[in-house]
Image (cartoon, rainbow, N blue to C red; front, side, top):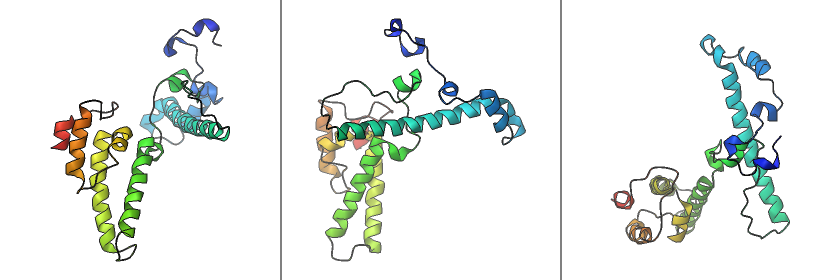
Amino acid sequence: SSSSSDDGLDWWKRPSPSLWDIHKCDPKASSKCISKFVPKGMKSCCEEIGHFFLFCYERQLMWERYKQQQQQKEKNNNDEDDKEQPVTSHNNALSTMSFCNNYRELDRGTRYFHSEMLDLWDTQTTSTTTGNDSDEQRKEWMKQVLWASTCYRIVNKIETFMKLGGIPTVDEWKSWSKRLKKLSQTQTVFTGATQNPGVNRYID
């Protein structure tokens, strides 16, 4: 177990339970079970396969724990600015470092994009008199969604779009891109998680 002297150590230097320990799984017994379902050439990798699925399982549990903590915080009306990251796993690497969700739909950015596209559909269907589900409306909406997905995913930073009024439509692009260029002079507009082409190439 970790002692108080571990507090100043980096995560990789601290004693940490493995995923096998956390979920009380025997790697040898699990490997034996997995070996029944994999091709002959992969039987030597059964423990690694089991470890991968344990990682996926623990990562999903982390998301569920985080959501539960957030819901509890809202229920208690806790408006204090909590700078400490909530503990969602007993494994030091998983609790300290950043890992993608198992499902892209759970990501904050994807949920934002879906919300924007649904709002666009609502706006489009309520601003016309041809009905709420015509083929023409579906085609126009799909065109805008494909356009928006390109605009959004290259930047991939919610805060940028929120400051500029949302994800631009094809017709809004010219004025929106000018505001983006101006904003880029005072702050970072792209996500730091992926490579980006730079503002000028993005606009071109």
